[in-house]
Image (cartoon, rainbow, N blue to C red; front, side, top):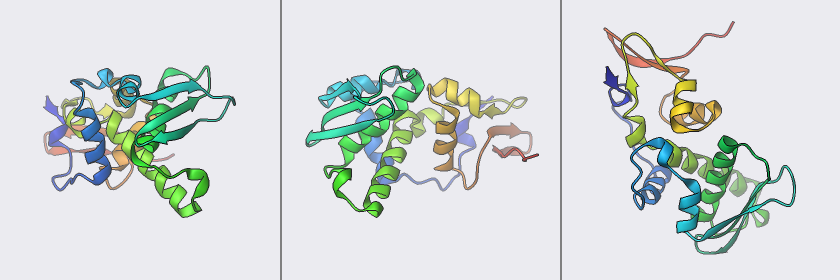
Amino acid sequence: MVKLANVLPYQYSYNMMEERANNVLNKFNYKYPDQIDIQEICAYYKIKIKPSPEQNLTYSVCTGFRKGFIYIPKGTNYIKYKELLGEEFAHLYLHTISQMQTTKEIHAHQERQAKNFSAYLFMPMNMLQEVVVSYDQPVDITSMANEFLVSEEFVYYRLSLIFPEKADAVARSKGGFGYIKWLEK
């Protein structure tokens, strides 16, 4: 058995969003992916989580530097709740300008930053590197989603920040390591 660290591209370089997510995680003693507690992180930054007044509306309101309120619809399942909370936390952590008062371009840029930040927060490289890849069975997206307590869509997105094309699984063979892209029917 080998760890995913041996499969990842040699020229992987950290970026600013990843560094910022790591700075947040470094304030806590999380050793395993299932320990990452976004509610604890929000509490540390004095960010309050409240039920959204509208069923399908998630948003945040900044009340100061890295402070504010996050509104999430009642009854949202845990995985979706965690992912939404992660992105809204990212907005409050990274941005001080209201999205309502920006251009479409700035809004799109902020959304991309928040999505990337939450991907790095919930699936940090140091924990991804610890995923075990055996000779006889690839690590598929479902397994990774279960290990990191995120949706499969979230795993696809995180892996897209590493690999040059869609990765459906990570595998090892006697000849080497790599990612698998399933062919469409």
